[in-house]
View 1 (cartoon, rainbow, N blue to C red):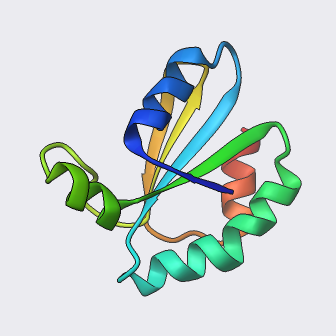
View 2: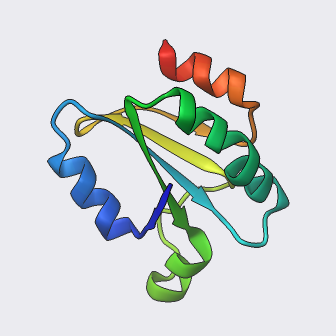
Length: 104
């Protein structure tokens, strides 16, 4: 999973025609984020190869941009098909539940 910033994420969404893309906001101070990104999401990525997944570090974002309209909790996932947002999910979920959700 590649680490990107918000500008890169927006460019990806605007240029993805029909592709499935997920962006996960996380904080380095968040133990739930660490568990989710390091243990659960690799399982999801290996199973859901029709999705491209990226992570955005909230701490880096705040240092560069301050805080205006960012996610209210971590981890937070934004899921797109092309440039259309399908849904937003927050918090921890086991990989099996994430895979089931992305399959549906």
